[in-house]
Length: 99
Image (cartoon, rainbow, N blue to C red):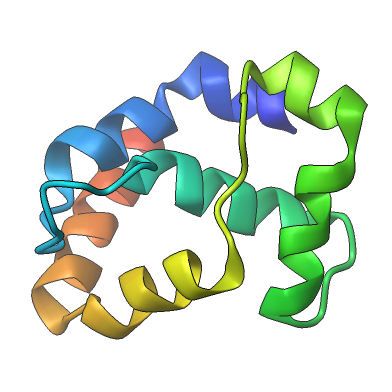
């Protein structure tokens, strides 16, 4: 699934098109966080705290080229700042990917 997301360029599109207001010291791109959430849901994670466990999967981290993984508070901080306009931006990405 990760290769499919990469082939479509979804992570890059999220980074470029979704404008969640974040601090200048944000360590993780928005696309990376959403890709991690997507992979977590697909792999059976039912809670955000389960998604964070993906960071312990060495094979996943290596294949994705991720050196570190966001902690739970980083993910929830992004989701709390997510607004209606960001949903519209994600819908636009979906429209591009699914012609």
